[in-house]
Length: 482
Image: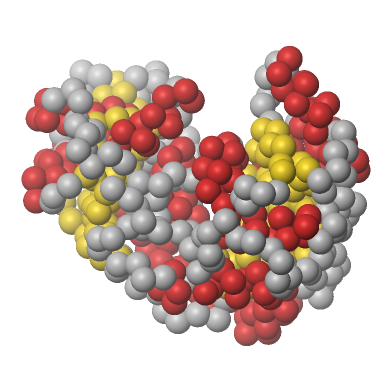
């Protein structure tokens, strides 16, 4: 690593090791757990390459809820002040200010590192792709994808577009703490973005045949290959090690422990009857209200989970409350713990029910909601207010898919999951909003689970995904809720 580069803040040992291994590689993966400071590593990597006159532009592609955080927080904290930079942040709106910034972005300026921040979803649009194509063909770029599992789908247009653009960039980087959220096959397009054949396969199907065990199934006149297990995972781990750096929080940071616990509740009589009707017949009647219909298996799973949470969605779209023990258990938990609390819930209706109950018990200023309908202009102020130790805002009630990425909520030492989803990445991301650099307390994670229901099946499915991921990454068994 070049000696003359001056860090704005001295890196941790693991961050220095990551840079040492990958800073000058044309393609590299920083598989670093959330909260270990992978953003700083990427920023330092880019500024080192710029100082060496190897690039003149850094492009960061990140999820919608994260990419603006690079401008507001990461670059402010970690970019060296003595090196000039110009930051342009993508917006779908065609404002005069943005058009001026984009024009400046496409103009080469000596001694200035151009930085372009864009959300990955924009790469599915014609305009977003066209702008990024101009950027990477105008400059010597380091093209990077933060939370690279967003490009794990080989059929998604954003994945195809990014792989295409990567071919004209001399330097490519991916960042994620958990590259495998469903199966080892998640790795293929992430690594294809880095370099064709980086995993030793030019075809997804030969890669699949090497690492997945499949059997041929028949369904009527249709036949298909079904994955039943995975194989050769030690070999895959060895290949990844050639162009990646892996670190877990427990191996490198003096962070306090995570503590997991489960609070089980019984279904009420009303829930039990409704749950069993839906489970057996995919149809249930709520007397005096209407029908709950599940026309597909996926819809059935969602409806069952909603019943576990204390509400039902009728076939006319109306939401009906169902007597539940979950809310009482949540209020009991909040009585038992000190300090600020993050409450994650999978459904919008959950969130509104929780808000209603918290307002009744603790007053209007006690909580803030962070979900899809939360205005963009309010989101940063909610986080800032929650992070103030003495503020009245004690409860952060959020939807993991919206608030689980890019936020720092270290003022909380208790995290409650009122309901869960099947997406492992979203679960782990949401866990680490509180457990990251800056946290000084043990963080307790409490799952409120309806016994013998889909709640337990979801946690079991997440556990299986964790087991597969740790095996591919060559890691030990990971402690978790189940």
